Image 1 (tube, rainbow, N blue to C red):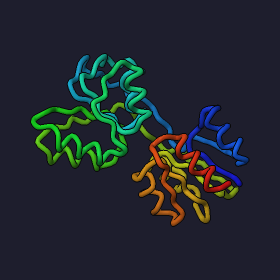
Image 2 (cartoon, rainbow, N blue to C red; image 1 turned 45 degrees about the vertical axis):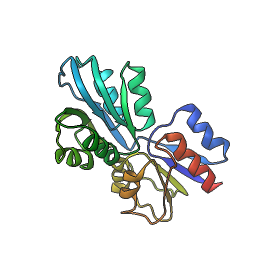
Image 3 (spheres, one colour; image 1 turned 180 degrees about the vertical axis):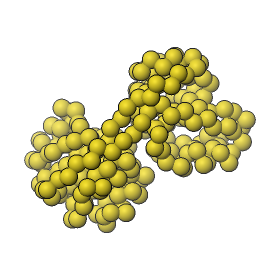
Image 4 (cartoon, helix red, strand yellow; image 1 turned 30 degrees about the vertical axis):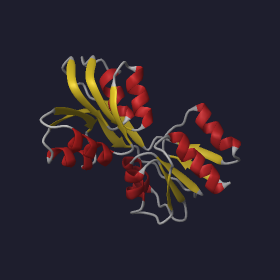
Length: 216
């Protein structure tokens, strides 16, 4: 069984697939670059929908040193925020869930959303129509890394809607099973394939576990 991962995996993550007897090819379907915009030193409420958002703010020396309250999507994003000394008030499984939480639990607050130049509409739209203000700060750029593959795959691992879009720009899913990290990624994959499986949790390891269990 041949599996393609649309992002480079860590050694331990690769071993999970290889130990299951799967052949693995990996590449980064998207390219991330940090933008140079300066940020204020302190913000009360910060919203992060990905690890890249956290990295673009706290690892790129933009001036922001502290967010009083953080709201994020995914356990890995939460862990990275906590590693950087931030207090996480809420962790949601997807952006829509996070948007509804903020809309339902806060009023007359300002939230700063650290996001990519390409981002989904759910969270901003939900907060826009709540009794709060949302300020979008684009701190990183997402670009497709287009690559054409001649071989076919039993399974393809997807970790973002942008990754799906990048892969399908040059390739067809055909009979491959798309293993997706969450519902928003799965929604994009379903535009190109009927064989879409969503991981139990929004982690890379959960995507890998689902692929191994399905294909082996």
